[in-house]
Picture 1 (cartoon, rainbow, N blue to C red):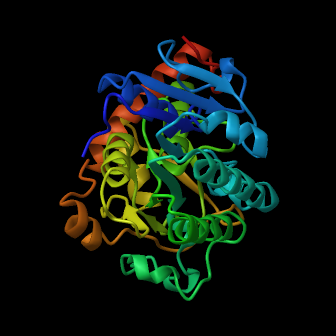
Picture 2 (picture 1 turned 180 degrees about the horizontal axis):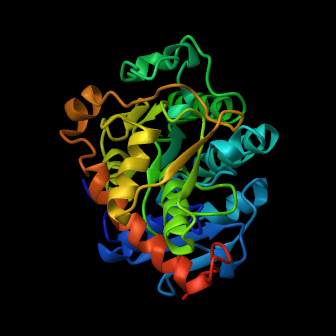
Length: 337
């Protein structure tokens, strides 16, 4: 199902990577009433569409959440203080404070009678005992319990999932929950400490090529495995789930498992270069292996994320390459139309 063009839709975290892409996609579909909300100054939004209502609010605040949701039919909660593994391992307290955002948004959704409430959870909710092998068995939705999620960020996500469930059961808020697996793509963070592995690897390979210093630092031993989902698949899965009748948390992620070494191989192939690999065994690296079991999403939604990593990574690489040339290695530029 697609959103009704007459729906009044609010994207919380609309100045972020996924949120910005979602706002743009809703506009492409002809949705006329879209509100984008983010705490960042407008100049720091990843994308900003002038044809939507752009609002700056701190969604950790209850009153701000009521301002954001008043009059809205559909709520997408993508707002969170998060980043790649280097960020979430070193900022557990900040990650936990994000619980205020979902709590206050759910309260506002109940107060104003929102028709749908989507919550972006994460594969970080899964039990760490099931992720100790690089040849990991793909994670099923049931593997979140017994609970042993990623410390900080994962616990906040799992708690917020439960809050969505109980607001649906007790108060009738129509919540939908997706567990994202490593979303990447153009117009995302590629430097500064919050970037995910695909963007970080692309940046390092591009920098090595442009500077002539043909070496690359890899966090960990490179054998840790992950799956990575391209942004277009994330958008399709998010909107399809939001307007479906399915109410339990569900994986939205690619099932294409690769090692970090393989991710480097792909980036090198796109760049047409081979680099000397230096492994930083003391750097944050997360669990040993994590992959998405897509049995459930194929059964429930009749679809699964299907963009090949090689294809999505090339688009991401080309965009980061242009950004690096444009900014002169100065870091992620400020955006805004």
